[in-house]
Image (cartoon, helix red, strand yellow):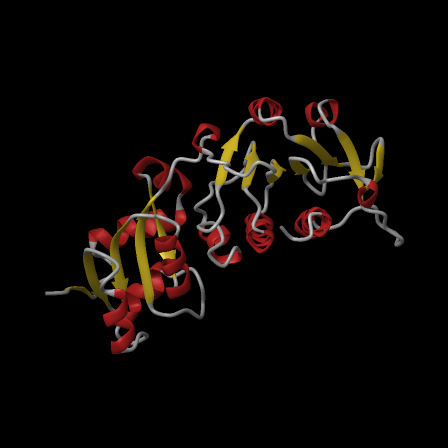
Length: 265
Protein backbone atom coordinates (compact mmCIF):
# COMPACT_ATOMS: atom_id res chain seq x y z
CA UNK A 1 0.00 0.00 0.00
CA UNK A 2 1.33 3.44 -0.98
CA UNK A 3 2.03 5.81 1.91
CA UNK A 4 0.42 9.27 1.71
CA UNK A 5 1.64 12.62 3.08
CA UNK A 6 -0.44 15.77 2.76
CA UNK A 7 1.14 18.15 5.30
CA UNK A 8 4.18 20.31 4.65
CA UNK A 9 4.85 20.08 8.41
CA UNK A 10 5.53 16.34 8.20
CA UNK A 11 9.03 15.62 9.57
CA UNK A 12 10.10 13.64 6.51
CA UNK A 13 9.07 16.51 4.25
CA UNK A 14 11.01 18.96 6.44
CA UNK A 15 14.09 16.73 6.13
CA UNK A 16 13.73 16.48 2.36
CA UNK A 17 13.36 20.24 2.13
CA UNK A 18 16.72 20.57 3.88
CA UNK A 19 18.21 18.16 1.32
CA UNK A 20 17.04 20.48 -1.41
CA UNK A 21 18.24 23.67 0.24
CA UNK A 22 21.41 22.78 2.14
CA UNK A 23 24.68 21.50 0.69
CA UNK A 24 25.81 20.53 4.19
CA UNK A 25 22.69 18.40 4.61
CA UNK A 26 23.36 16.57 1.34
CA UNK A 27 26.97 15.97 2.36
CA UNK A 28 26.14 14.74 5.87
CA UNK A 29 23.39 12.34 4.81
CA UNK A 30 24.92 11.42 1.42
CA UNK A 31 21.54 11.87 -0.21
CA UNK A 32 19.93 14.33 -2.59
CA UNK A 33 16.67 15.06 -4.39
CA UNK A 34 16.03 14.41 -8.07
CA UNK A 35 13.13 16.15 -9.77
CA UNK A 36 11.49 15.10 -13.01
CA UNK A 37 10.84 11.85 -14.85
CA UNK A 38 13.69 12.23 -17.36
CA UNK A 39 16.22 13.02 -14.64
CA UNK A 40 15.08 10.06 -12.54
CA UNK A 41 15.39 7.73 -15.54
CA UNK A 42 18.90 9.03 -16.32
CA UNK A 43 19.96 8.61 -12.68
CA UNK A 44 18.72 5.02 -12.71
CA UNK A 45 20.56 4.37 -15.97
CA UNK A 46 23.67 5.96 -14.45
CA UNK A 47 23.66 3.47 -11.58
CA UNK A 48 22.34 5.73 -8.82
CA UNK A 49 20.47 4.03 -6.00
CA UNK A 50 17.02 5.50 -5.48
CA UNK A 51 15.61 5.13 -1.98
CA UNK A 52 12.21 6.81 -2.18
CA UNK A 53 9.87 7.95 -4.92
CA UNK A 54 7.41 10.77 -4.21
CA UNK A 55 4.64 11.74 -6.60
CA UNK A 56 1.62 14.00 -6.77
CA UNK A 57 -1.40 12.35 -8.34
CA UNK A 58 -2.63 15.85 -9.22
CA UNK A 59 0.32 16.28 -11.61
CA UNK A 60 1.08 12.74 -12.78
CA UNK A 61 -1.12 10.40 -14.79
CA UNK A 62 -1.97 6.89 -13.59
CA UNK A 63 0.05 5.26 -16.37
CA UNK A 64 3.10 7.34 -15.49
CA UNK A 65 2.75 6.40 -11.83
CA UNK A 66 2.56 2.70 -12.68
CA UNK A 67 5.71 2.97 -14.77
CA UNK A 68 7.66 4.82 -12.11
CA UNK A 69 6.60 2.59 -9.24
CA UNK A 70 8.78 -0.21 -10.60
CA UNK A 71 11.97 1.86 -10.15
CA UNK A 72 11.94 2.36 -6.39
CA UNK A 73 11.24 0.33 -3.24
CA UNK A 74 9.41 3.02 -1.25
CA UNK A 75 6.60 4.96 -2.92
CA UNK A 76 4.97 7.96 -1.23
CA UNK A 77 2.01 9.88 -2.60
CA UNK A 78 2.22 13.56 -1.65
CA UNK A 79 -0.22 16.42 -1.96
CA UNK A 80 0.28 19.19 -4.49
CA UNK A 81 1.24 21.59 -1.68
CA UNK A 82 3.94 19.23 -0.43
CA UNK A 83 5.21 18.71 -3.95
CA UNK A 84 5.46 22.43 -4.59
CA UNK A 85 7.45 22.88 -1.36
CA UNK A 86 10.00 20.27 -2.45
CA UNK A 87 10.11 21.04 -6.17
CA UNK A 88 12.82 23.32 -7.51
CA UNK A 89 11.29 24.06 -10.90
CA UNK A 90 8.15 26.09 -11.41
CA UNK A 91 6.86 23.78 -14.14
CA UNK A 92 7.57 20.13 -13.60
CA UNK A 93 6.17 16.63 -13.83
CA UNK A 94 4.95 15.83 -10.35
CA UNK A 95 7.60 13.32 -9.38
CA UNK A 96 10.67 13.40 -7.10
CA UNK A 97 13.16 10.80 -5.92
CA UNK A 98 15.56 10.56 -3.00
CA UNK A 99 18.88 9.14 -4.19
CA UNK A 100 22.21 8.24 -2.62
CA UNK A 101 25.21 10.31 -3.67
CA UNK A 102 28.22 8.67 -5.30
CA UNK A 103 31.91 8.98 -4.54
CA UNK A 104 33.71 11.26 -7.00
CA UNK A 105 37.35 10.72 -6.08
CA UNK A 106 40.01 10.68 -8.78
CA UNK A 107 40.76 7.10 -7.79
CA UNK A 108 37.18 6.18 -8.69
CA UNK A 109 37.64 7.13 -12.35
CA UNK A 110 37.57 4.22 -14.77
CA UNK A 111 38.96 5.54 -18.06
CA UNK A 112 39.20 2.53 -20.35
CA UNK A 113 39.85 4.30 -23.65
CA UNK A 114 43.40 4.08 -24.99
CA UNK A 115 42.99 7.61 -26.35
CA UNK A 116 40.92 9.45 -23.75
CA UNK A 117 39.38 12.91 -23.97
CA UNK A 118 38.88 14.58 -20.59
CA UNK A 119 37.32 17.93 -19.73
CA UNK A 120 38.66 19.72 -16.65
CA UNK A 121 37.00 22.79 -15.16
CA UNK A 122 38.87 24.69 -12.46
CA UNK A 123 36.89 26.37 -9.67
CA UNK A 124 33.59 26.82 -11.53
CA UNK A 125 31.31 28.98 -9.40
CA UNK A 126 27.92 29.16 -11.07
CA UNK A 127 25.80 25.99 -10.96
CA UNK A 128 24.34 26.94 -14.34
CA UNK A 129 27.79 26.92 -15.92
CA UNK A 130 28.61 23.55 -14.39
CA UNK A 131 25.35 22.16 -15.74
CA UNK A 132 26.08 23.53 -19.20
CA UNK A 133 29.61 22.03 -19.12
CA UNK A 134 28.12 18.65 -18.25
CA UNK A 135 25.67 18.90 -21.16
CA UNK A 136 28.57 19.63 -23.52
CA UNK A 137 30.55 16.72 -22.08
CA UNK A 138 27.62 14.36 -22.57
CA UNK A 139 27.05 15.56 -26.14
CA UNK A 140 30.70 14.88 -26.98
CA UNK A 141 30.78 11.62 -24.97
CA UNK A 142 34.01 12.59 -23.23
CA UNK A 143 35.66 9.92 -21.12
CA UNK A 144 35.51 11.95 -17.92
CA UNK A 145 34.78 15.36 -16.46
CA UNK A 146 37.03 16.50 -13.62
CA UNK A 147 36.19 19.51 -11.46
CA UNK A 148 39.09 21.17 -9.66
CA UNK A 149 38.46 23.05 -6.42
CA UNK A 150 34.66 23.24 -6.84
CA UNK A 151 32.74 26.10 -5.26
CA UNK A 152 29.46 24.20 -4.97
CA UNK A 153 28.45 20.58 -4.49
CA UNK A 154 27.65 18.42 -7.49
CA UNK A 155 24.11 17.66 -6.32
CA UNK A 156 22.98 21.28 -6.10
CA UNK A 157 19.46 21.18 -7.62
CA UNK A 158 20.39 23.95 -10.05
CA UNK A 159 23.24 21.83 -11.42
CA UNK A 160 20.90 18.88 -11.88
CA UNK A 161 18.33 21.14 -13.56
CA UNK A 162 20.73 23.01 -15.84
CA UNK A 163 22.52 19.81 -16.83
CA UNK A 164 19.14 18.26 -17.79
CA UNK A 165 20.30 15.13 -15.97
CA UNK A 166 23.78 14.99 -17.52
CA UNK A 167 25.24 15.05 -14.02
CA UNK A 168 24.16 11.39 -14.05
CA UNK A 169 25.39 10.47 -17.54
CA UNK A 170 29.01 11.64 -17.23
CA UNK A 171 31.83 10.03 -15.30
CA UNK A 172 32.77 12.84 -12.88
CA UNK A 173 35.64 13.25 -10.45
CA UNK A 174 36.50 16.06 -8.06
CA UNK A 175 39.94 16.97 -6.74
CA UNK A 176 42.51 19.65 -6.12
CA UNK A 177 44.40 21.24 -9.02
CA UNK A 178 47.63 19.62 -7.82
CA UNK A 179 46.12 16.13 -7.59
CA UNK A 180 44.45 16.42 -10.99
CA UNK A 181 47.68 17.52 -12.67
CA UNK A 182 49.46 14.55 -11.08
CA UNK A 183 46.69 12.23 -12.28
CA UNK A 184 46.83 13.49 -15.88
CA UNK A 185 50.62 13.25 -16.00
CA UNK A 186 50.58 9.73 -14.56
CA UNK A 187 48.16 8.75 -17.33
CA UNK A 188 50.33 10.44 -20.00
CA UNK A 189 47.49 12.74 -21.00
CA UNK A 190 48.40 15.96 -22.80
CA UNK A 191 47.23 19.10 -21.01
CA UNK A 192 45.77 21.91 -23.16
CA UNK A 193 44.95 25.01 -21.15
CA UNK A 194 42.50 27.61 -22.44
CA UNK A 195 44.38 30.82 -21.64
CA UNK A 196 45.12 34.30 -22.96
CA UNK A 197 48.80 33.98 -22.04
CA UNK A 198 51.44 32.32 -24.22
CA UNK A 199 48.77 30.71 -26.34
CA UNK A 200 48.41 29.53 -29.92
CA UNK A 201 45.14 29.29 -31.83
CA UNK A 202 43.32 26.16 -30.72
CA UNK A 203 42.77 24.76 -34.22
CA UNK A 204 46.52 24.61 -34.96
CA UNK A 205 47.10 21.79 -32.48
CA UNK A 206 47.01 18.03 -33.00
CA UNK A 207 44.61 16.40 -30.54
CA UNK A 208 44.94 12.87 -31.86
CA UNK A 209 46.72 11.71 -28.69
CA UNK A 210 45.28 11.47 -25.14
CA UNK A 211 43.95 14.94 -24.39
CA UNK A 212 42.67 16.98 -21.47
CA UNK A 213 41.03 20.33 -22.19
CA UNK A 214 41.34 22.66 -19.18
CA UNK A 215 39.04 25.67 -18.72
CA UNK A 216 38.94 28.21 -15.91
CA UNK A 217 36.58 30.89 -14.72
CA UNK A 218 35.57 33.78 -16.95
CA UNK A 219 36.75 36.27 -14.32
CA UNK A 220 40.23 35.00 -13.44
CA UNK A 221 41.02 32.19 -15.87
CA UNK A 222 43.28 29.33 -14.82
CA UNK A 223 45.65 29.24 -11.87
CA UNK A 224 49.41 29.47 -12.41
CA UNK A 225 49.81 25.77 -11.57
CA UNK A 226 47.89 24.79 -14.70
CA UNK A 227 49.84 27.19 -16.89
CA UNK A 228 53.16 25.87 -15.57
CA UNK A 229 52.17 22.28 -16.34
CA UNK A 230 50.44 22.86 -19.67
CA UNK A 231 51.53 20.91 -22.73
CA UNK A 232 50.32 23.91 -24.70
CA UNK A 233 48.18 26.95 -23.92
CA UNK A 234 45.45 27.48 -26.50
CA UNK A 235 43.15 30.35 -27.35
CA UNK A 236 39.97 30.82 -29.35
CA UNK A 237 40.53 33.80 -31.65
CA UNK A 238 37.85 36.44 -31.18
CA UNK A 239 37.09 39.42 -33.36
CA UNK A 240 34.81 41.47 -31.14
CA UNK A 241 35.43 43.88 -28.30
CA UNK A 242 35.71 41.34 -25.47
CA UNK A 243 38.50 38.81 -24.96
CA UNK A 244 36.57 35.98 -23.33
CA UNK A 245 33.34 34.03 -23.67
CA UNK A 246 31.14 31.92 -21.43
CA UNK A 247 33.16 28.99 -20.09
CA UNK A 248 30.69 26.37 -21.33
CA UNK A 249 30.69 27.87 -24.83
CA UNK A 250 34.49 27.91 -24.92
CA UNK A 251 34.64 24.33 -23.67
CA UNK A 252 32.19 23.26 -26.36
CA UNK A 253 34.28 24.82 -29.15
CA UNK A 254 37.48 23.18 -27.89
CA UNK A 255 36.00 19.77 -27.15
CA UNK A 256 34.32 19.50 -30.53
CA UNK A 257 37.52 20.51 -32.31
CA UNK A 258 39.11 17.46 -30.68
CA UNK A 259 36.14 15.34 -31.81
CA UNK A 260 36.36 16.76 -35.35
CA UNK A 261 40.05 15.91 -35.64
CA UNK A 262 39.33 12.40 -34.43
CA UNK A 263 36.49 12.13 -36.96
CA UNK A 264 34.04 11.84 -34.07
CA UNK A 265 35.43 8.49 -32.95
